[in-house]
Image (cartoon, rainbow, N blue to C red; front, side, top):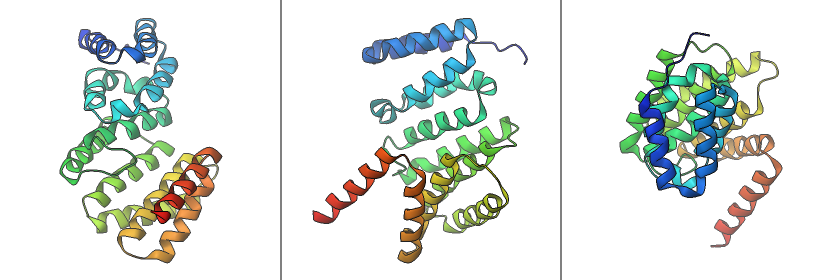
Length: 218
C-alpha cells in the first residue's frame, strides 16, 4: 500500500465536529488517534458508527467529512466497509433518512457515486452495492428506465454469485420493492418486501413490521 497523506484540513474538520457534536467526542477522538497511527480498520469501523448518527445524516456535515477526510483514505478501507459509510453519507444530499430523497439533490448524489466509481477499481461485492445505491438515485429522480436496467442486471449477477453478503441482498430487494411500488405493481412490491425482510436483522424486521401496522391504523 502506498503512503497515504492526511491533510491538515482533515484534522481541522474533526476539531469542528468535536465542537459541534460534543456528545460524539469519544468516537471523533478515536478517529483522530487512528489517523495519527494509520489504523485504517479502526477508522473505518468508527466512521460507520459515526455516519449512522441521525443528527449528522440530517445535516450536510457527512458530505464535508467525506471530501475533507474520508476521500483521502478511502483506498485503505475494506471495500464493503467503505460502501456502508457511503450509503450513510449520500443521505446527506437530502438531509432525510431511509432513502426518502429530495429529487433536487439526487443529481449531486449520483455525480458523487459516479466519481467514486471512477476513482476506485471495484471488482467484488462492493461494485454491486454501488450499483444499488445508484439505482436508488435513479428511482428518486424518477428515471425509471435506468433504475429498471440496474435491477435487471443485478438480478442476473446475483443469480450467478455465491455467498453474497446479506447486505447486498437486503438492499437489492429494498430497491426492487420501491421500484415496484412506484410502478404500482403491488404483487411484486409485496414479494420483494418479503424478500427484503428475510435479509434484515430480527430487531429491524420487527420494527418495520410494527411501523407498518401503526401506519395502517392511522
